[in-house]
Image (cartoon, rainbow, N blue to C red; front, side, top):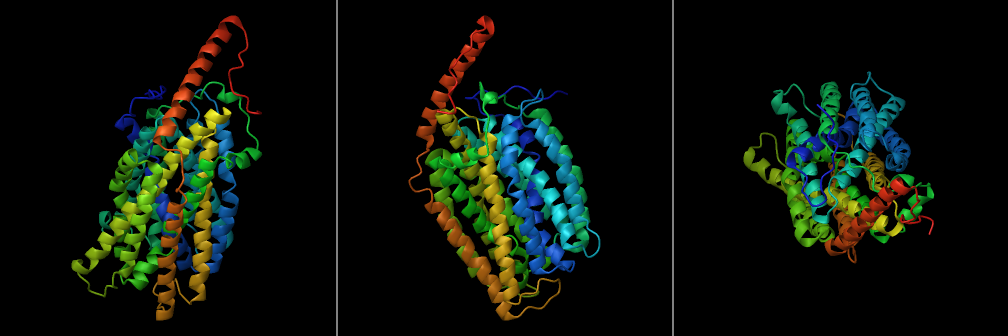
Length: 484
């Protein structure tokens, strides 16, 4: 069995078999995001840690972690190896993510804040490498505007299967593994230890790793290039939108179990099953929004999804609390509401990532530098910043209103009301801001087609010049001068 080496033709859709193999690392990655975002804070609180201690540990890790992606992006854009540009990084990130997640989810009794910081930092480092690899590699799989909507729609949709499979564990194991129960977390850790390397191996074997554009390897980046990159108006809008669209739905993640268990009356098992409807909606939602983007354009589709999200989130909040012994008729409206909210939220990640790929082409035409990984590192960094902000803000608020997060704790109506307000207002306001940011956005399908035509003409000229240079030994100056 050999590594897939050839890149797809620019005009030929990427085969579904290739996209499936490429998407496999996204399955355990998506499951890890659910565990780390929704269950990990509650898990450590249940082990005896204080709300403030957990929030402080997560904030500390994210403070260091947010600086990692830009430097990873610089390194990836300089990487040229016989096995490709991205495969070596996937090989590096796989064992780091495996070991970090194992230590994090199978801690000793009464783990300290220092223990949480060390192994959360390790796990996040591995996740960061794999996430950035997949994001940048996706852009290389298909260079066209609509082709990227398809690639990101399918890969994000398939990644949902990882989260859904994890959330189905209570049913699959007949209650032996229940997310949210402290005793089940070591078993979840072992699932990651097995799934991550298997998925990464299949991805590396069957996904083409596109070679660099002509002369791209000669471009050298400096730290100030990150500041100059944000002078690109299209990228700045996308980065800011990514931040608020992460903050919006992300605010609900650390509150999710508390909200549906304490405020809405569902059992811990039912809370996990309800999350299946939210995340599982992305299996249909991601390809759907990808198709809509091919008709309306990516930024208009994001705006449409923002409005739909605000409506569905408001309707979900208005649903009444269920009571002990409730039947399916009482559960069904909440399940439908979670499906609608998840369906709308599935548009944000995939479309923002696809838009970054288009901005990369715009920048390469203007300045001659292939900064794919660098640009993607900026949006993965904003995602991390958003995660920090949500935990740092909402956990102290919960403590301030007297909410007790330990298993079996009884909370006052005042504490429950504070929980509900945290869950309600932030997502709708922040998602609304994200939609507003795309008024006046200019990088649509028509403009991107012109950019791609110029890039392909220039790359063809560079290739011919390089061939002539190798024959006659004469240096060519066709490559754009980065210093101009």
